[in-house]
Image 1 (cartoon, one colour):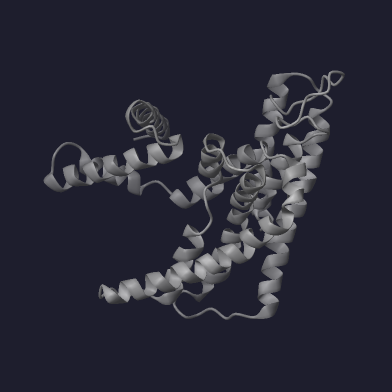
Image 2: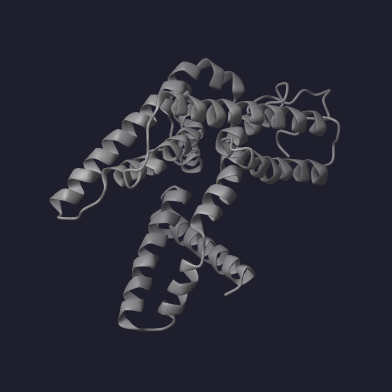
Length: 290
């Protein structure tokens, strides 16, 4: 199955699952689609085991997909950028301390707890899994999905301060999770060596470098956008930020996730022109709602 047909199938299934959720389950869209997709996947596995239909062919097609590149190097930047554009910068700054603690120490604590519990659970079940694999699993599973979080918060009446803490943490924890994964990966197989200098280098390069790079890219895109008033050009510029900016960040070994969050916040909050702020009547270059 070529890439076009594969995308066509995935988009079609996503649309059908979204309709089924809206009509019957009425869960938040992201959660509803995930639940239906899980049930559908289990059904496909059962069909494949029974030798019915093209289950084996579909399984081979799925195995050819590089989910690491598709998700981390493709979809993640766009998802984070889109979520960050709708965050009010003033509210985010007012909750910066809590968001910073939750996105760093919260992710570290969750990684340790999930990794440790997974390790002992596997041992209880008689399954031998290296402890470093369990910690890597904890680093992967601890960051929450910003798109799902923001979608749920729009439907639930919570105080604005709590909403901003949860939304802000969900945007920045992906970068911390990626750094944790990068730190833990060399230890798989017992060949890694942990030093304070290496930790400092990775944090400085991935986190600080990613934040600074995102600021530069967002600032440049903002000044380009404020000089045009044409939706087609604005969309192309933002797409270039998401694709080109994310790819360049990865090439420079910076955190593309954090870079896209910062760029999205800057572009979504240009001089009070974000969707969260009223648009000045005299300003025709506001692009927050483009």
